Each structure stands twice: as C-alpha cells, then as structure tokens.
Amino acid sequence: MNTKGVAWLLIWTLVMVFLTIGSVFAFIAFSFVEGLKSDLGRHRFCLSMTSDQNIADTDGGDGTAIGIGWLEIDTTSKKLSYELMFDIGSDVPTSLSIKGPITSSAVTAGSAFFPSDGTSLAELEADGDDGAYRASKISITTAQSKAILDNPAWYYVLLKTEAYTTGSIAARLLNECPPRV
Image (cartoon, rainbow, N blue to C red):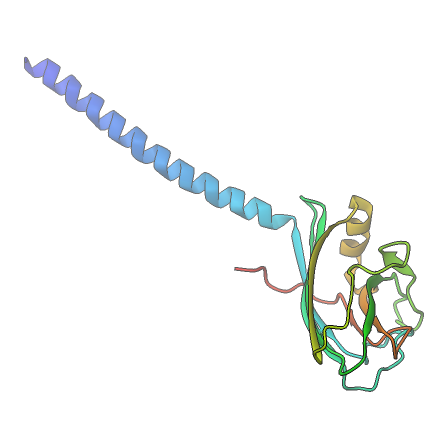
C-alpha cells in the first residue's frame, strides 16, 4: 500500500473514532437534557399537617394529630401525586381533599377544589394502627393545576376524621420542596 493510501486510511479511522465518541457524548447530553425537561413540569410541595394552620374549617383537633408528606403536580403528565403519613390517634380518617382558594387573610374556609365534588382523594380506612400512610397518583386538569401553581398558598390539603368532621389536620401549600433524587 502506498503512503497516500495509508494516510487516507488513517484519516478515515480517526474521523470514525471522533464520530463514535461524539455520538456517545451527544447521547449522554441528550439524556441529561431530557431528564431536566421532565423535571421542569413537576412542582412538589412539602406538607406539615397540623390542626393549627389558620384555616377556618379545621376543628382544631385535640392538638395531638399530626401529618407529614408531599404533594406533587406534574403539568406534563397531568397527574397529582401525594404521599402522607399521619398520626390521628384512635380517630378514624374519613376524607382527604384539596380545598381553596382561601382569602389572603386565611380566615375564610376554601370550597371543595379537588376533587371538585367534595369527595375524598383516596379511600381512607381505619388500619388498626395509630399511624396511617396513604399514597396515590390521580389525574388533574390543566385548569386545576394552573390555579394551584399560580397561587399555591391559597390552597391546602385537609384530612377529615370521624371526631373532627370539618377537618382534623391541614397543610397549606406554602413552599415547594426539593425534587426527589
């Protein structure tokens, strides 16, 4: 083989190596960007549920009921997800809903917002423990998610129980929390 042929073969090999390496880096970069884009539509709120949330429809509970968790609205998939852990003693949970909008002074109780018919987000049953855990992913309309995301502090998650029929514990959607890792 002559020198010119070897030179072209070497150039062709180098071009193929660079294209292969470039393709790998492009794939990694594309995957990273797509991952970021999928998180852009997610809005996650940390929930600290107590009977002292300055919301008119909580009965105040007995002061011992508490709950923690998160609520996430994904505008891309139009899903609302939540995970809650709560301790309401021997009381029995009856419904879980998102209510609002409330006034800026938080004196007036919000109307049923989600589900709009006032029913519960989840089937709640007494589980025999003092504590309970609930998680779900349900559909939400674009209008509902926009209303919440435009003014999240105007909305709250409310847990009703047999003993506290207008509301035992609640959490306002005040702060978005960091995304899951």
